[in-house]
Image 1 (tube, one colour):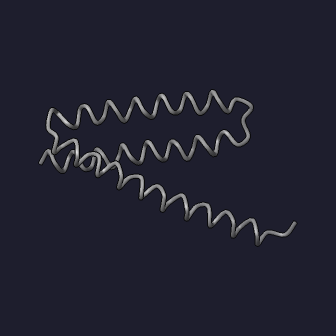
Image 2 (cartoon, rainbow, N blue to C red):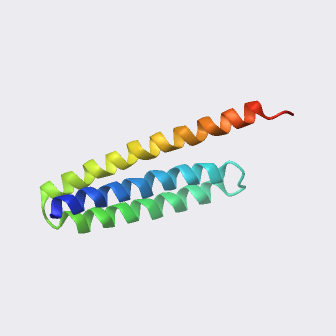
Length: 98
């Protein structure tokens, strides 16, 4: 049971981390405070992920490895979703008249 919880927890952490990274990069494109955005986001995202891994591992190497596998799966999921969003934006931009 705890292995499934670790997998789902890792997946959620991956989605939060890499989704937050994507949103941060999108936000910094038009911001005058790029360094502040990147530093703040990095510290918050890293803190959340490390805390999550600490509590999900509960001293078990197996649970830690399973949660890291879920984290990587979250990365792949966010990568796929953001590619679809970017492709839709390119199609809409190319088809709209100037």
